[in-house]
Each structure stands twice: as structure tokens, then as C-alpha cells.
Image 1 (cartoon, protein in one colour):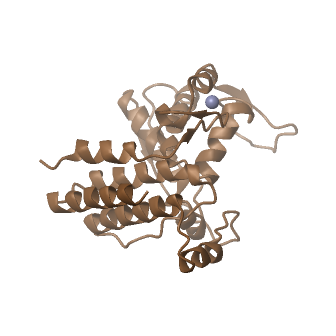
Image 2: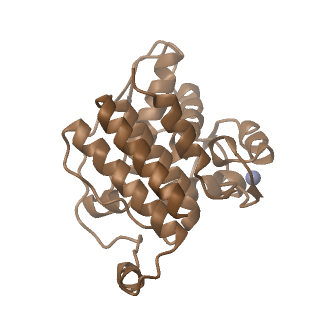
Length: 250
Ligand SMILES: [Zn+2]
């Protein structure tokens, strides 16, 4: 059995300072990247019916967990636009509460996420609403509710709001001025490549986001992908060696 626990410990040990995704407070070792105060605020939210005024004719009943303010808004933005992929699990759990309130127990649930465009999905290391819906469905199933995710929709290309300053990074790399964050990002990409190879999937470029604080989340996500792919021991050993090399260079 490969030393998965050791790799995890190495990866989490490497992380840069964490900032709460709900209030941007800087804390050590946040569970899912959200501080206890923000967790309490999110926990206090209860699904309720909402309705735009005026409502379009034929609009079915709509529910929301809460108004789009405070930690709820900040965590959603951090997840969607700032690379905090690790929030998919807790946000999926919150979404599951809303779905559970909307659908009578025992009735099958089909979740249809609004798809990202291909460009947005590339920039966000995967389709963010799809990932959220899958966590939500898994949570519902664990609670004994039959839930599935279906993707009948496809997004047409459009300009995306996620921008990457690749020219600036290339210049920095050429000048030999590589930051600690760049080194961690290089590690993230290496682990992502190993995971893609292990899954037999094409390699994907992990975006280098403007916010360096997204890096620990990116690292967690690609490491989880790698472990989930159950690669041979030598691949995990190679990942561990990459971690050690990166730590040595920091
Ligand atoms: Zn907070």
C-alpha cells in the first residue's frame, strides 16, 4: 500500500498562510479554508423561499439559503473566481440543505448545473458548478435521498472574466526571478500532470491565479485527484519527491 498519508502530510505541511474565504481573516490551519466565526454564520442560514419582484410568468418556486451577502457571498466568490476549489465540499453540503428543503423526501432528485464555457472550465481547473453539484448529490445520497447530476446543457463560447497574466509570469521566469508561489504552482502542475496520466486523461494547464492564496487549495485538489486515481506506488513516490524538491527550493 503506497504511503498516501505521508504524501498528504507533506502536501498540507507545505501550504502558504491560509485566509478565511468568508471574511479574509488570516488564520493558521483552517478547516476547508473558513474560520469558525464564518462557519457559525453559514451554519445559521436556513433555506427559504425567494421570489423576484416582478416574477416572470410561470416561474416555479425558488429557494435560496440566504441573501447574497457576507460569508455566503465571499465563499461563493472565493470558490468560483479565486481558485478555492476545496470549498466545493462545504458549499455542496450547503446546497444539499436547500435541495432537501425544496424536494419532498423519497422523491428522486436530478441536479442540472449551469455549465461553464470550455474556456472558463480550463481557467478554473474544471467546471465549478458541476463539481459543486456532484458534492451536493453525494451529500444527498449519504442522507438517503436518491440524487443524480445530469448535464444536458452545453455552454457556447463567450469572453470570460477570469484573466491570467501569463505574459508577466513568462517575463519573470525568463529573468530568473521565480517566486515561492511560482515554485508551488509548478508543483501543483506537476502533481496535476501525474494525476492526469494516472487517469489516462489529457494533461490540463492549472491556472496561475493572481491570488497566491489559492495555491494551497489547488494543491489539495490536484493531490486528491492523484490519490483518487489510485496510481502505482512509483507515481506516488515521484509525487513525494516533487514535494521534497519544492520544499528544498522554498
Ligand atoms: Zn471568516
